[in-house]
Image: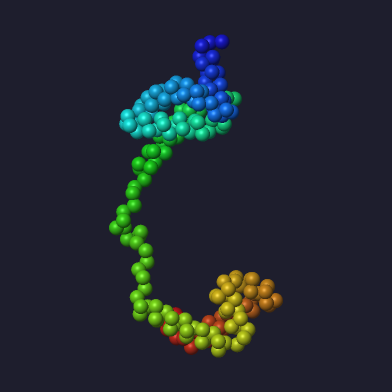
Length: 188
């Protein structure tokens, strides 16, 4: 065998030792072999010196954590490690390109709190709605309650009450007309 093949097998053995026994000396040997190479690779990809150093630490920590996922039948150790490095570099670039949210952006501002007058007006409308629903015939009030207070679909109401879907819709239409006539513009 050539020295490159032996080196490749030896590197695979180091990763397997990390995966199987959490062998720290194997990790040190792997780190010493790959850290400078990975750093050089990252710098050629445009990373600054300190950024490359940080990425090397992250890559090698990933190697330590995910050594059990390495499969020597799928790729060489170097391919696996450099793929991790490339993916980390891409992640950093994506984060850099993602703009920071502008705190003054009106889209990020929440809805303004309703005024006390709006709360009072809303409460009055709700009270008028409850009064209007109370005056409906029982069958219409029942479908309104199921639809709007229990959030049931029209088909579920039909099934629950054992009536046709068209009947549910008709009762709701009739109820809306009566409630609107009683409540007026606040309903519209």
